[in-house]
Amino acid sequence: MTAREGDTIAAALLAAGIDHTRETPTSQSPRAPFCMMGSCFECRVEVDGEPNVQGCMRQITPGMQVKRQRY
Image (cartoon, rainbow, N blue to C red; front, side, top):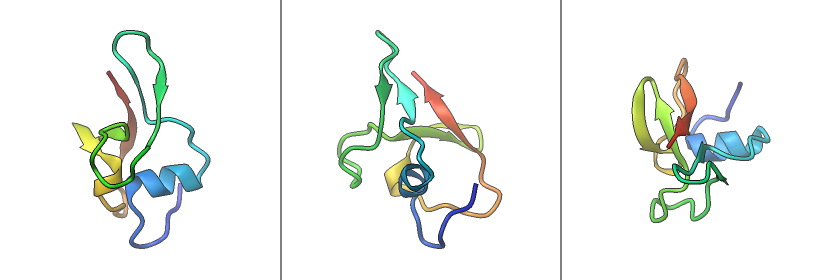
C-alpha cells in the first residue's frame, strides 16, 4: 500500500479504506481509529513485530510492516 509522506499509520489505513485495526479480546468486535491523538488506544496495530503501537502516533516509513492487532 502507498501513503503520503508525513501520514500516520492510522491516517494511511483509513485513506486506504481499511475499516478496523484490531478486535476486542472478549467479543472480537472490530475497533478502528477514533480520537486520532493518542488518547483512546483504539488504533493499536503491530508494527515490524512490535505489538500495541498506537497507529495515530507513529508516522509511516518505507518498508514498514503493519499488521492488524489481535487482542
